[in-house]
Image (cartoon, rainbow, N blue to C red; front, side, top):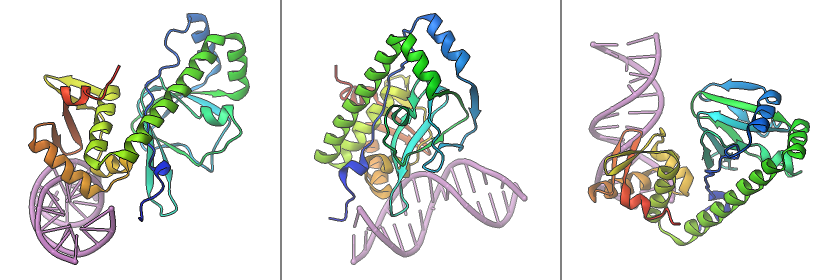
Length: 232
DNA sequence: TCATTAATGTGTT
DNA sequence: AACACATTAATGA
């Protein structure tokens, strides 16, 4: 078994927007304290060498979180969309994780220093609750995904991944959901612990069955097929 | 446009 | 799944 450890293949999404449903005053407080900056496509926002004690709020664009294995291969932990937070693990715990965060497109990001964050959380307990909720949700999704990785074949893992991506980033087009991401087969493989070739072959099969439609760096998944995984 | 590189498709082990 | 190789699409000088 030359497979890497299952937990190294863990991929999860977070769809929690911690900022939603916050009272306006606290939002304004956050805006005031968090300098906003842009990170162009491809920019490394976080790396093991550069880990400021900062909580990032992603306002626009997408950020990919990944690790680099001993073999030098990247493993994608997750893709964050607008409204998500990252860097929070480091801000809340002493644990250092060797995670990279890279802007997938031109992004707009707020950076909150730890001291400011603590101040805001003290004044806005709702936000603290929201963040706990977000972390809990991520953990739950991670557990679901771990189970999927351990018990399913590549076809099921791929379908699960695509449905989750569709849930978060999908744009409905008729009876298909278009994934507005710009992912290569290699990147998909990185997310489900498979190989580029297998993903290509599996996608072709699914395409023949009409479950997905593929183009270069573009994927659409049948709505019903995707929705089958969007339980509850 | 042409040449180079990146992404994808496929067969073999 | 890994590898080699073919084909095709994107990129950019």
